[in-house]
Image (tube, rainbow, N blue to C red):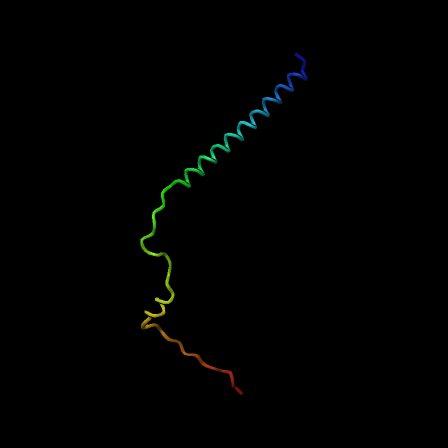
Length: 74
C-alpha cells in the first residue's frame, strides 16, 4: 500500500470520528432537552411577588421627614 493511500485512509478515519462525536453530542443534547421538558410542573398555590398597593395601604407608624423649601431665599 502506498503512503498516499495510507494517509487517505487515516484521514477518512479521523473524519468519521469527528462525525460520530458530533452525532453523539447531538443525541445527548436531544435527550437532555426532552428530559427537561417532560417534567411535571407544580402550580404555585399562592401568587409570587409583592403587591405594592397592599404595602402602601397597610403602612402605619412610619418615620416622617421634614422638608425645608428654600425656593424663595433672598
